[in-house]
Image 1: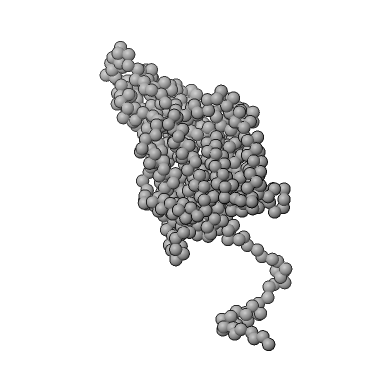
Image 2: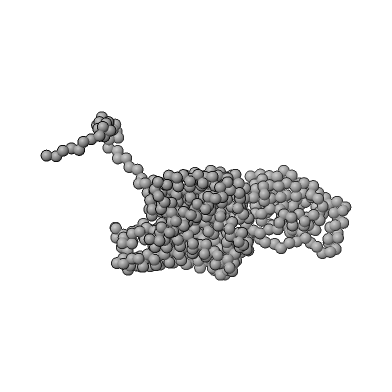
Length: 549
C-alpha cells in the first residue's frame, strides 16, 4: 500500500488553480519555448550594448580616418581594392562599408556596422564568461564590455576595429569550447557528434580578423601557443586534436597568405612605414592608453589624453576582479592559457614593436579588452554568492557613471562647425591658410551639404605654412587644428609664428582642437616686420608631421 505525501496548504491551492485553468483552444497545441539562460542573458546584454551604441551615433563629427573610410568605400570596386592595398589595408572592411556609404555624408549609416559589431562583442563576452563560470560571470563580463567607454567609442567609429574585436572573440569562443570538450573536439568534424561549430568559429573568426587588419597576427600566434597547453592536458584525444588543429591552420594559411602577399607586393615590403603620426611612447602616454583601454576612462581621439572622470577609482575594481579571475583559473591551465594569452598577446606585441617603430595607440589594443573582461567576470564569480547582487550592482552603477560623460565629451575636432563658419564669413578675395593640406580635405567633406567645396575652389588656399607667402592678401584666415592622430605644434608656437602679421582682427575657437584667426590687410608696422623677416631669411616654417594616411 502506498501513501501519498501530505501536501501543504499552498501546494493544494496551486494545484486547485492549475486544475481550473485551461489554455484557450487556439493555444492548446502551441509549444512555448524560451532561450536557455546561457543564451538569453548574452542576448539581453548584446541588445543593451547595441542601444548604447545607437545613442548619439551621429552626434560626434567624422574625423580624418572616418572620412578616408567613406571616400574609399565610395570608389569603384577595382579602385577600392587597389587604394586599400596601397595604404596597407585589406579591402575587406571597406567592401562591407560600401552598402552603408551613401552619396552624401551620413555618419549614422556609416557607423552602423561598428555598432552592430560592438553589440556582437558584448554578446560573445557574456556568452563566453557564462559558459566558463556561470550567470554572475556572464553578467559582469557582459556589462563591462557593454559599458566600456572605449568600446562604445569604437562602436561609434566608421573604422574596422569593432569588427576586428568581434571576429577575434568568435575565434576565442571556439578555442574555449575546444578546451572544454577535448573528447568531442578530437573527433573528425565529419562525424555528427564532432565539435564542428567551435572548430568553424576558430578558423573563420581567425581568417576574418586576419583579412581585416594585420594587427591580429598576435592572435594567431597566441591561439597556437594556447593549443599546446590544450594538447598537453589531453591524453587519448591528443592525436585527434592535433589532426583537427593542423587542418584548421592549413585552411587559415591557405586563405590568408595570398592576401598578405598582395599587401607586401603593393608596398614593396614596407608594411610598417607611414606610422610617423604615432607619438613616441612615454610613461605618461602608456598610463593614459592603459586607462582608456582597460580602466573605463574616456580618451580624446586626437591626443590620446584622458578626460576627467566622475569615478576614476572604478578601474581598480576591474583590475582586482581580473586578477582574482586569473588566480581562480590556475586550476584550469588550459582556459587560463587561452584567456590570458588572448589578453596579453597584443599588448606584448605592441610594446615589442614600439622599440623599433612606435605603434602604441588604443585602437591596436582594442581586441584584447574582451578576454580581460572575461577574466574579470570569472573573478566576480569567485566571490561569495551572498555578494553576487552587490557585485553586479556595483559593476552596473560604476559602468554607467563612467560611460555617461562620453556622450557629451568632445573626443573629436568640430570641423562640422568650422566649415559653416568659413562659408558665412570668407570672401572670394581672401586667402585661407591651413596647417596641413588635409585640413582642406576634411573641410571639403563637411562642405558637401552647404556647397562650401565649390566656394573653396575659388579661394586662394595656401597649404604652405609660411606667413611671408600669404601676407599680401586682402584678408588671411589661418586655421589651427588637428584632423588626425598626429603630433602638431603647440598653440603657443602657432601664435608666435603668425604674430609677424600683427594682431588678429578676429579669432574664433571651435571646441578644444580648432582655432581660426583672421588677419586683415597688413598694417604699416606689420609690413615693416615682414620686410625685416624677409631680409633675415626667416620664413616661419616648422617641421611637418603628416597625419595618418
